[in-house]
Length: 190
Image 1: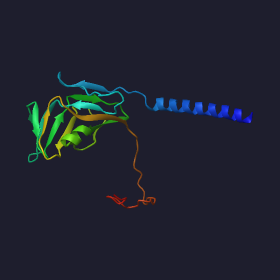
Image 2: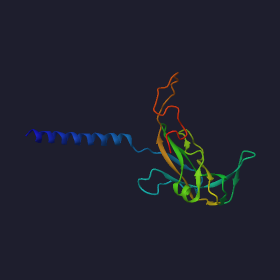
Image 3: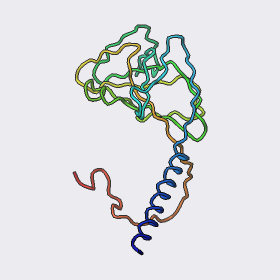
């Protein structure tokens, strides 16, 4: 009899734990709305390719070339560009957003472009703060040994929205010891 009562109580506790976890997950993962404004009629709003994807793919709207000598961006009016090895280009994405306070966005490389074409995003992840209202861009670099052909309308990066953890630094005179200590740059092994 005691075993039966024990099993019933454990089953009820298990159900309550599961219910509690589901409630907490619902509270943590509430849907937020992010206002987005197309800056041009032909801009493409970022979108997920598959249900459940973490990132929204963003599309090239136009390009700017980078003049390293004068440190200027040069408008590039063509719809395509051959990005040579080690060269960078600014890819304008054609939209601006209003991210709710307490959140921020990251602009990240697309894995397929990195693996097959050698393209990546500099300043990665690029951070878009909630107060930013200007046009989004991606700074793209070709790290391959061959030119890469890009065109307006290509998916160039992905966007992930993250919850901001509010923090502040507390200055101290002494830090606690750790197993790693002062080791860095591969100190934990290959």
